[in-house]
Length: 428
Image (cartoon, rainbow, N blue to C red):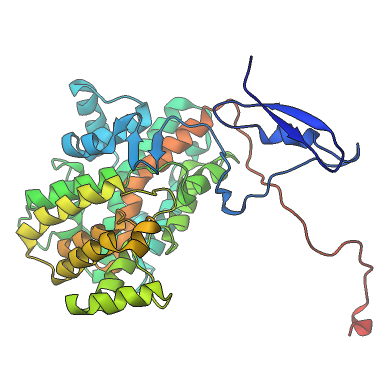
């Protein structure tokens, strides 16, 4: 006997039976619940989609209550320990970890697309000297659609993979250009004998003719951070990527929209907020007073709690270890002592424990980016580089979904109805 749900409408006394599939019911099954035959039918009301599944996916699995994050079934802890970012990118897009020859071919193919058209440099130069790096990245990603008009052929799997490779390869170049523009420095071209993260650091920090060799600890930390940020299920920006792509827009336009969603401080700006909080606290001795004001609603405890995780964010433990390795090279950030003590107090305080406010990935990632030498305006950009892979994996999956529909949510209309027009000279 199939699993079903029986619903009784107390307005009419009618009973309806709907199927349960994968622990969900189809929203369309509710449409048959009506008071009158000409009614539209019952809808669900779910601001922010807190309990609505908008798609089926095989990319990322999260169990927030247990603190589990998996890419294609692989625990994030194992991937962060054993893989580099390009290997994880292959996994997310292809569904399986690559063998040695597949990984070599994949990394070589990405290197073929790291350069951007010289006109992009002119576009970058047109921005103000103090333009936000994320705004520059969003604009230049969107402009790539004009360089690759064939990207509109979204139903061709081979063409989609070419565009995916281009984006994964070019976004770090655009990000580095945005940073160099903000510093008033000439752009560094990609150097394809370096790894993905080494090349990015080279484009960011190489000065003049001096040789640049990034510290291995920084390269590894960046690789791990990129892995941790590569995908995170149906978050705000991933949903935007799918929404734009559902209209069959090209992936450059869709990804620019996803990056714009990430630009918001509630999504991609949390690690900057953590740094600002630690600076506000200023000293370990000020933590008790700050925590007390958090309880009173005067301050917010940034970097704690998560929309999905009701347990310790599994990424936070990994990032904390990365921070230790980075500070051995760059020197200890004085804000780290404040962060460690704040974490200790919060994890022992009944007020925060009861509310399941555990550290999330943003709590330590900003300290690492700051130690590497990045301004806070680059923090959301550092998020967008690896998340490009997740957005593209979500896009690929959507384009292959037989149930794909252009996204068009319903609304509950509460405004005026059937008003007669009033000429302007008669309006009060």
